[in-house]
Image (cartoon, helix red, strand yellow):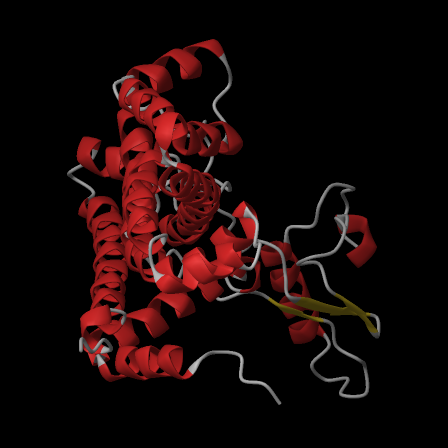
Length: 358
């Protein structure tokens, strides 16, 4: 069976694993991403599993189940915390009858939706962390669970970062390789275009578009891609200029290989180190960008879970320190973790460790 990676790539991966700080940071970050992607399984107001009259229900990823399905007196979506209390009362009332089949509800660890408001504590929000109410990091100024909003806000930020990264790098890498390989007037034309386009004020564009239309996730991805492809383009242009005069490229051209074949099959694999090295730092920049825009009020429309919106609440409610401390800790943990990953990748994929000059 053919190996998926070359021997050199395996050496680089082994070196990455040997850099413990970066490797453990990578494992931690992947765990956080996995938990965010499966957030409905442990931070949601929908039950994971309900047993009622001998039948099992899976509300988490299924259709909305109304309350009258479980014998409650309403026809809108079931309040599963209330249903659990009702089943507990029924169990206490029928404790003597051990032969009767009991109904039960399995709730997530955090039984609150990021959009759900809780005013049952008897005090005006924000409320402090409470184990009895299962608000482990407290609530914000609208009574919404902070832990749930942190988790879903992280999923939004990471999704934004990776989608924008992929789109920007596809455009920037291909254009940079073409500029470096074709050269001439094509290169000069796009150099002038990039110089002009990079002078357009990014924040002003955001402010104008937000005032003209309803801000949404894909709008910010599109704006970030419009301005985010230029950085990687310069790097790939320089590397392509360097690689196109090497013997393997000249041999491919002599054998009749076309432009795209040379770029995709020859130049890109040999310049991949630059893409891999810069990608983690671009993720950090994208997460910071979305958080900053939300903090300034130019980000996603409320009530979308957002770290920037939580940070603004924390600054405005310093008498509720659990808000600002939670979001600052979460932001710092993610940014430091991704920075450690980037440093380890840069060290592991450094060609100086695997090159020999004769």
